[in-house]
Length: 91
Image (cartoon, rainbow, N blue to C red):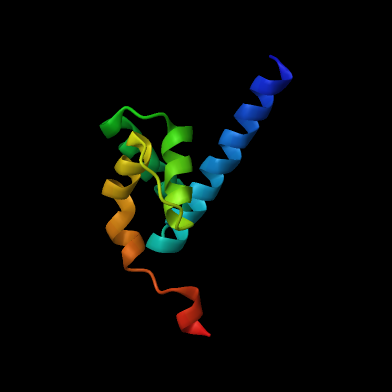
């Protein structure tokens, strides 16, 4: 495996872990339940888990996007993210 391929795989794993953390925080669920939710979206959309995880992280961070992955992440979790309380409102 080349260095660049290994680095891409590591980045994808980190992104998936962050996406799981986002779902754990939003849903108040266990990490395995959050992972299962990501997998369901992957199965429904046919988008790779690294790509859908990246789109969820971007969406949660407030970054906009126009890709198919971002649109599917918005369809799956946009309403859930809209319900969250902004951090500045709790200070």
